[in-house]
Length: 205
Image 1: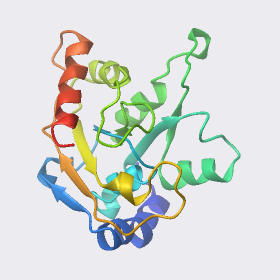
Image 2: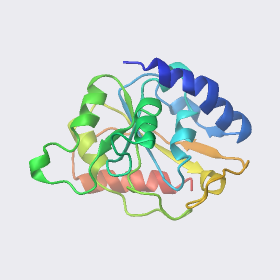
Image 3: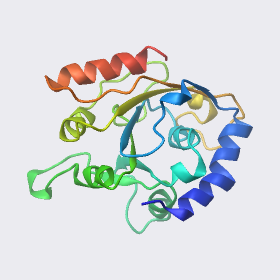
Image 4: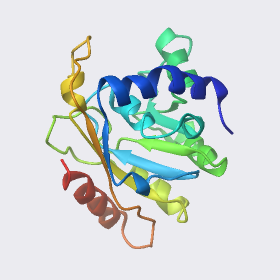
């Protein structure tokens, strides 16, 4: 279901800032999904990464985007938590899962079942620019659960220079996004699936 507040925020703030001020360049934009469900996976080096991924889409499509993030970072009741949930559609997951907490991917599965587009960072946290960290297997488990849903790797470049880890003020530098070929779960070992995603993300770094 589309979120109108998210669409207007995208139309007025996100897209003009990322596309205009930072001159976002997109390679193979035709590979982006026009509708959900879909899963976007990207390298993660900056807090601006999610805004850059949002800016790849039109305001109407942005209303379908849901970013997946660590639960402890976006606490319920905090201002940053409200902004993340209302304007970025954040779905929170626990870093350290325990069986008593139930299905850790329930929120992601529900979003896909509703026809939404997930944004995941398989590295799990912001890494070192130009160096791919070990990928978490959550995206493979999600793809196995939803084998008809496309998984699209997107390599972001330059966003780490706009807002490096520890910085507060963004710099007016150029950023780029390379959209890889969509994949779907075709069976086999989850490690093979993750290796393929890692190769796709690293190839355009």
